Image 1 (cartoon, rainbow, N blue to C red):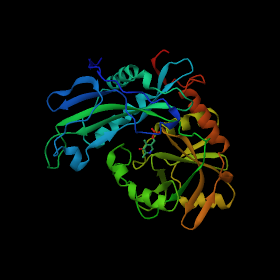
Image 2: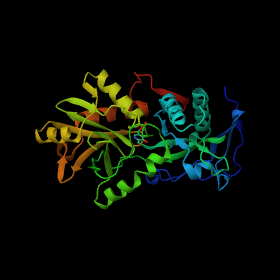
Image 3: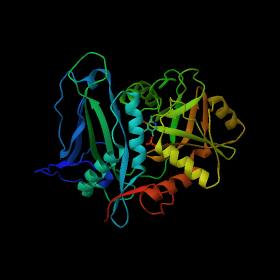
Image 4: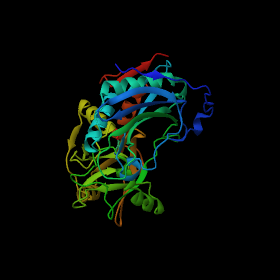
Length: 358
Ligand SMILES: *Cc1c(COP(=O)(O)O)cnc(C)c1O
């Protein structure tokens, strides 16, 4: 058990009253969790303190060489007012995998879950009430040594901040338009694609910006070696339903192992769908489309849960999927997953982690 020192704010903020205007990632709660790491001492000094700015040396190593990792999960309010998390053990397991890749010291996963629960319970009044809303949880670690040489740091901060977030789909599950990125790549074999680290996002911004200029919302990344096999979308994993088979690219090191992806696979298997994790080329997808066998395409991620793809552009070819409407498997996955997350369906997989009763 982590011994967490708690310092409460003397100046609590106004909570947002209009939950339809929450959006994503702008508002932060009254408190945050912090823990330090120093070589020789390990992780220590776990505390919850008033939310506020950090003091960092301008030479702090994270600012120069990107030694940083993060996670993203949510707390949900159920109909009886209790608060729950979805598979937080998976997030902290993945966080340690990211840490290992970025040479950041490992954390005790149980301690991290405890810290999350204590912080979320303290901030429970910040978990919004409206349909589809949640409290976004952002754990992250930065290297703080004031040193501009390149080496793994000796000093780190692990923090958790919380942000009330609006309903992702305020106007129904609208399909997104994505295009296949032909110029830039996001990750390469042996690189950091499987780690949730800032650099993977920094290098994706240029492709994303060019997609926006062409009125597409996201890009679909191909593998970094041959630019032939499909990998994933911005911050979502990708699924294809071809001739009734549910297919997602397998985890070869350059794809982020999404927890929503994993959960979608488990649900599909349990419901008896034919499921494959394998390499899938963009040619195979275009061919399936031409043969009328590309039934559904959707992304998976914590933010949107399931994001149906309505238009997929590859060069000059524009594929309109399922008449630009959400398909039956996408809808089933969305209903099952959100049902479990907001406590409307029984948790037959044991994925829910209760924070507090209502
Ligand atoms: C976080 C993330 C995902 C989705 O992971 P979830 O655990 O399902 O939220 C997918 N791709 C990338 C690049 C990500 O960073």
